[in-house]
Amino acid sequence: MAIVLTKEVLQDEIAVTLAQVIAAANKSAAAAGIDVKESNISIEQLPSSDILWRINYGPRDYSLRRGGDFIVDVWERNMSIKQVLRGQ
Image (cartoon, helix red, strand yellow):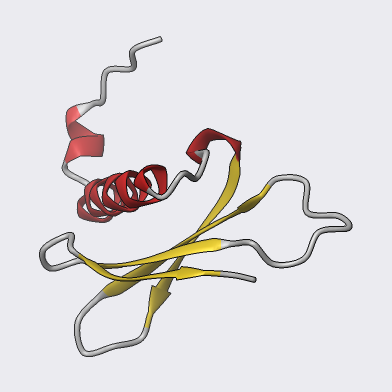
């Protein structure tokens, strides 16, 4: 189902930035074989001199499971991937 975004939503700088950040991280995760739709996704803003976002892809059913998260750090300034981490 297509959703039309209102002008108000598109003018929300944080919402648009986070959409771009998650799109960049999703591309990296999918390329690494992560099933993005089946992941529990969390987003965190990391303290740094420039704005850096950490996107964490974990299993939805994490009971009796250890590690295995896939983490992508994305620079806000240019939506580039700073680093990719795999949990063990």
